[in-house]
Length: 442
Image (cartoon, rainbow, N blue to C red; front, side, top):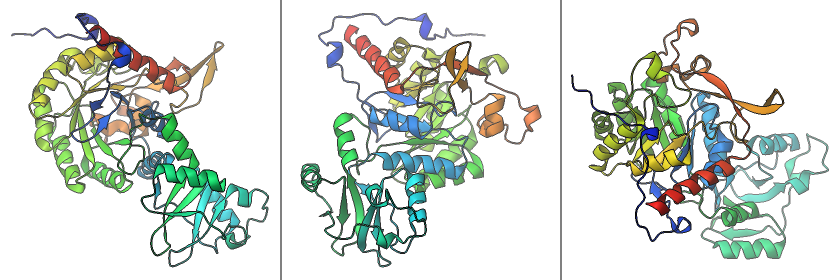
């Protein structure tokens, strides 16, 4: 039996070479999928202790992208997609509206649910009637009071579709207001421009945005009928990327799920995985995948290699899979086994277009879960999606154990705790800085 040599990140170093590029000059732009580019080559992992809406927002603002985990109910995951898409945009398209006959209580509930500070008020025919903002309701105390009695309805600040950001900024300043209502020729409200979105565009110039100026977001789905229904719902919620997320992507069900997902939308990109061989990479590309996720068992909280004895050393898996994917111009994502910025640089040098980060972002402020104290230090929970807790919550189908009772699950991951790390932006800054340093050396 011929057993080839396999390499992981600790087995190699990048050989320094003559360079006229300084780290500050390094360009970290890359392709996430065939059609979507990122300004930094980093994704946050689709794990229930890493990525929900808050993490996805931060990742997109910094130039990467977050992948919402699927241990959420379908509607919860779709709500998270919508929260990211509405958080920052050049213009909120088809904003949430309310009728003039609605009550103050209904309006306040809507504002709280969607984390917004103002709602356009529209008549039954869709025409703009006014706007209700926090200033209008600040001292109102009757929840049954009609919106029409509280809303601002005179001298409304409106603009037409296609207004420039400079003109919008000028009008907001001139009127001393925080929101501009975008109307069509029939005076129907079709959009909303806020001062916060303009400020965010200045603060985060590298943010990953779609054609409408909204933050991009990815979300994990799975195989089978339930996976198809989830994928369909995510596409309807306007997700940018669907990740068909399984522990073993070289499976006919995964290929069929990719083919089915591609038929649902011509614009939404499909990432599939996980794989560790060039043959598996080719199978997913032939099924229509726009990017392939590489990594079986390398994660710090993944025990697939111990439990099942399966895997390929991650650096070798990335090199071989990337070489195969390059024949079709499809990017690969190195998922797992990355403990330092140097590991990320090695993965990119091996052919990956992006890297997916889990453990390094776990424990940050934006990661899901409560911070707790243990022996005088702050921690957050971190677990593999193959752990008993995660599978019991909903990820068992990722490991093809969806029909197994909770008592008989065979875990391929562990649960633990990681020190609290503060804002995720600080971690990402260090990661990108390390990658740029590597680019300067090589």
